[in-house]
Image 1: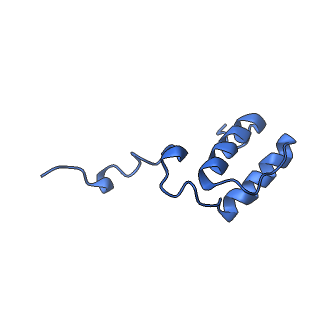
Image 2: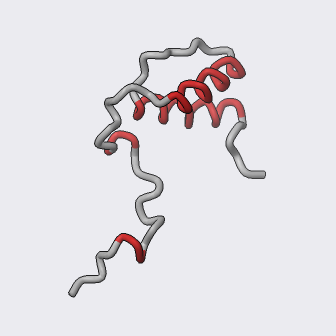
Length: 73
């Protein structure tokens, strides 16, 4: 019997690449939109409300780098 039980490795895929998400082409979630709008304003960039879940996630990562938000001290 294989030990491929995902419960034994609960964090092994916690950081999945947005390009690999099966729902990545769906519209971004409300939480993503809210946070992305805040980050966009802080970075002085326009907010694109047409992004997919995956693209919103990548944009959030990029803007967090730019603004310094979301980083542990």
